[in-house]
Image (cartoon, rainbow, N blue to C red; front, side, top):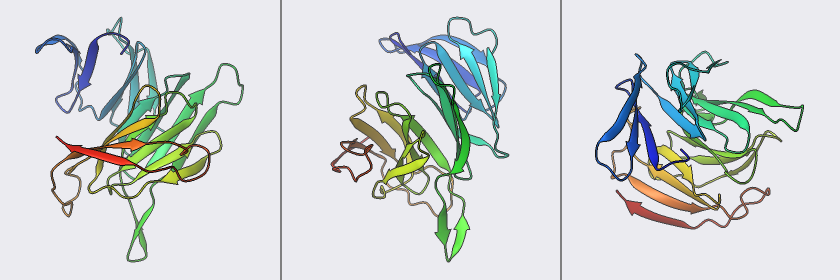
Amino acid sequence: METCHVISAGLDKKVMSWDVRMANPLMLFRNLGAEIESISVSGFDLMVAVGAAVNIYDLRNFERAVDLKESSMDVGIRCVASTSYTRGYAIGSIDGRVAVEISDPFNLNSIRYTFRCHPKTKGGKEHLVSVNDIAFNPLIGGTFVTGDNEGYVTAWDAHSKRKLHEFPRYPNSVASLSYNHAGQLLAVASSYSYQEANETEVPPQIFIQKMDGSYIGHSPQVSRDSSRK
């Protein structure tokens, strides 16, 4: 958010506003009456993923949603990520699919499609892997990364609809992704996600991934620094 505030939400069905300099929340925006899977903020627009839909709110007036986006997928939404450079977003599902919708005011060819980004196989059979988080590069329009429940992070180009790079597997599920302001560093949270019975419960870690060269079609120079929570 473009202030000193932090917005949080969770399975308690509440959306809260916090001042980073204070221990207590500033306000309860509202109780949505349903478990919140994911939120994303761009400017004053707050996107809230509930069930199989995304509600869009104006943080300056949180009385009611200003827009409702129904998912084109027939399964629950796991994560939502909004773009910072134009009107658009991407949502990830529990079955490994991503839906992208980007409206460019300077281009009549808006982007809207769904693809399966994390197909995995076990014993020759395809199985479903949840897309746990998505992050758009803040400076390179149309490029984003996805993180899945098996520990893989993959970079994509939304315009060309192609995979740019898949990074080596992280030690545990990818729980969260976040770029720095320049889009040169990617923070990857690797931790047990409680989604599968056979997940290995190891101490959570945060990796800092250098993204040099990862968006021009060749493998980036991978440098990982990690710190434990």
